[in-house]
Length: 83
Image 1 (cartoon, rainbow, N blue to C red):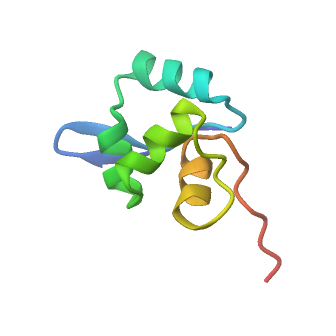
Image 2 (cartoon, rainbow, N blue to C red):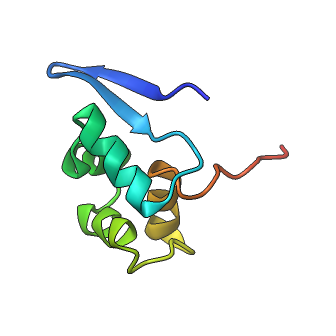
């Protein structure tokens, strides 16, 4: 699956990490690609603290913003829509 990027004045910013990831591999991926957690949170309108908790394994991302954050980090697949 191709990563989704959006162009900003500072360069391309990742929309979401490729699925599947673990918290450890997601952090390694962010470091390897020079993407900060803050930028990823701002781009996806998810609280930075939520992404940090997911990366630390303190949150499982089951509901609401935490679930959206888990999708952004590639910890969970994007839900299929049947509309």
